[in-house]
Amino acid sequence: MLLEAAKLEVAYGGIRAVKGIDIAVDSGELVALIGANGAGKTTTLKALAGMLPWTAGHGSFDGKPLREMPLHQRVRQGLVLVPEGRGVFARLSIAENLDMGAYARRDGDIAADMERMYALFPRLKDRRTQLAGTLSGGEQQMLAMARALMARPRLLMLDEPSMGLAPMVVELIFKTIRDVSAQGVTILLVEQNARLALTISQRAYVMESGLVTLSGKASDLLDNPKVRAAYLGE
Image 1: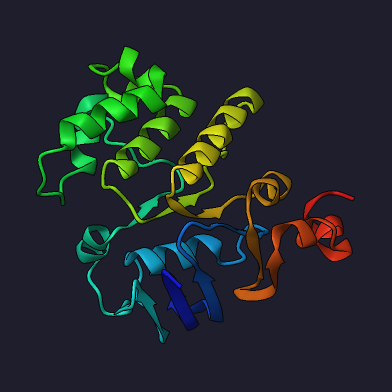
Image 2: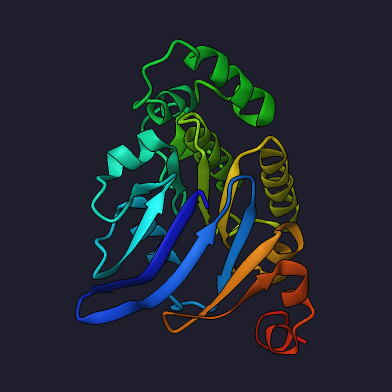
């Protein structure tokens, strides 16, 4: 497995937000993590990314111990998060945001990768000198994804990429996620639109109150009566 976490616990503010979960993602997979608000999905991604400390548990990324690995080292190893709310640098241009995505790299291919991002997200190319804070929500989501891809991730973690976006923009974002996955980038996707997440994923985990309550093939979970009743409105 590229990423593994066992008995992962995260607590802050006196609350156990994640209560000893096991999660794994293999190279080339697109894995979804679904659940209601407050289930612990975002906390899980932040802990895996190094933004929150682990209260307990152990894990690895590409065979290297993960729990004590600093955030910047995780990025250099290829573990990259696109946060909920996008988190673009509002006062920097699109091009400058993309440059920031490559801050940990030491190779000479950054300019070529930036052109690849403009090919993947043509709207960004048309606005490359525009300040990120003036972009629409959909354009900011595209920029956040492109900025993360500039780090050349081996595992891209996406936190609620469809949040607050119009249906047509969501369709475009998820087409891009499928395209990125088809190019060989491993993806761990947190998404409240459970149907959409399960439709594009190979495997999935269901979280409730800080625990993983179901896991398996995404197609099987789509047909699971409990999942359909709780998350698909059926």
